[in-house]
Length: 233
Image 1 (cartoon, one colour):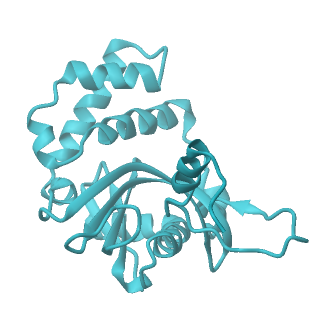
Image 2 (cartoon, one colour):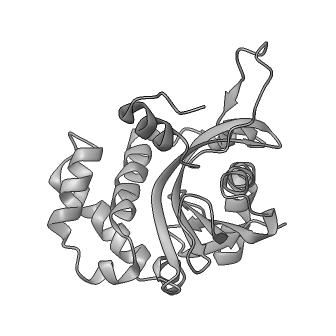
């Protein structure tokens, strides 16, 4: 039978078929599902959302806005402070110029760490990066939604970034927690606090891009300590 849909309807149908989300088919009788962010699986949510004050929260938002601007490490050498300042003003309105300068200083200091700059380096021509990659996916813990700070995808030759042809992925989650101790202690504390969130991200990325979990790396980055800690497993 010929397709009687209009050209517009056929175009909309093709667009809707883009595999940007992993969605599990459910019985028509099931009308609703619970959607939980990966942070909901944190072992101790009171610790995750412990009071650090509005200044700490705003500082985290400001530094994340700076990282969102950086596609690859080479951008660090060309992006101007005035541009970063504008991004912070947009993300955190009402803060003083001196406060914004402090955030830019902290961002620059973090990126001078070899470990953090290494996170931002492009590993090859087959690499693409997604910043603030929002998702809705079905994983072992149910339907999840969230936003990944930085998602590095490695493509097979001829592959696309929509899901087909992705051979591995790297999740990077930037944290501005201020933690006392040496690098190993800071890395351990970050993983203890955020392992549940990282695991949720890993499950989601594995589902979206149809990858086995062992081909999805998940790391938490401690901005102030200049450490990168990988989720085990």
